[in-house]
Amino acid sequence: METQFEARLKNLSRKEGQILVKLINRQTGQTTYDLVKDLKSGWNAYWMNKTASLFNISLKVEYNPYKVQEDFLIENILLEAFERRFLPEQPPKNKIDYVKLKNIWKDTLTP
Image (cartoon, rainbow, N blue to C red; front, side):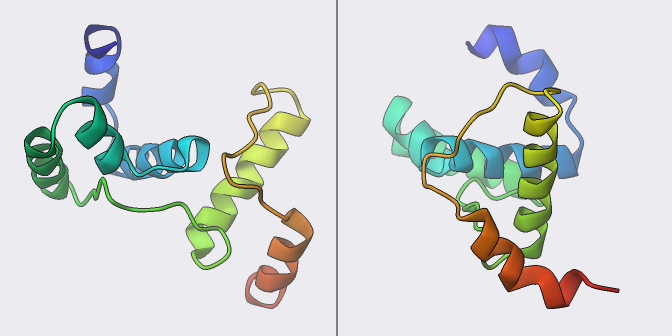
């Protein structure tokens, strides 16, 4: 997998890298740090996280659309893409109650 995706991953912008880390957590229920730690080693996870931090990316970040507005906006974009069939539907590892989510953010996002 590393050879298949390495070139594309190196070309991600900082923001795209931050979002990718969150989406990995959304889909797996584990942080990218924990996945690297489990698949490679704690030493590799440590150094990958240190390298990512140079680009303002944390491999330990969790996807939380209930508390982080950016994550809520990402969830909105995903749901729209699934609905319009731009992306195949991919349910998150941890169920998200979208009605509850919208109610949490409705006052914040209303102009």
